[in-house]
Length: 337
Image (cartoon, rainbow, N blue to C red; front, side, top):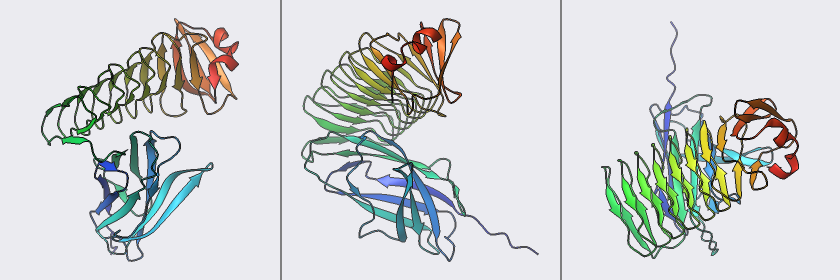
């Protein structure tokens, strides 16, 4: 008679979702079965970080519970995953991290992490990702919604507004706000001030409405409208539609089959391998740049009313209104690595 070993299913959450520099963040792991007697190593991947220079986080500090080891994993010179070893027989574990106050004004930073399937455990498909936003100013107003469908109005001063779960509608109403939808299908409205808006989980609609905004769809099929100034737009995972509307925008649509409509003026679009592809409208030669991780092995193929862009035989984008010969003859002016 064989004895079947029960493999734990692991879920991940973080708290608080809006965390200030100089405070702490808690990473909570829950297991449906106790960890083995030898302990259990789980892998957590960095899925999104709006700060390309990296975060000021001291990851494994006093107060952590049932955590034996925290080990960064380096791939191609970058730390994109970490290995966290949970204590023997643990059914819960908490990793406590310090969010360092570096005294530098950087603006909000949004980070998304996710559990990666590994040996000896499975991943809860409903609670395998977690996100948090780091903010700097502890003295501004913070308005937090409920788990229901909230209607939240800001004031004219800078503030933080967090919708939490539910299909929320959030109006910033002025000031350099941080507006977070979190769970649910949210509608978030910025103003002419420079705002940081993150839709979170769900199919969100985000309106920048002017200012040099950072607009993030995160998870879901999102609809994002930039303004006339230079916005930074991250689509995140899902099939997103992005209206950049011009002004020197930086656009990273993320994983999925995304549609990008450019306005008049300069724009930079990030194209990534093996993450779906972008459909790009209103490409302008001399104004639009396409960022890839390599300029080697680019290839182009004409289609009806446009051109396909490949890198190492992987489809990166479809650009309407252009031809294969135009792109091939202007690689140095269009593509950056």
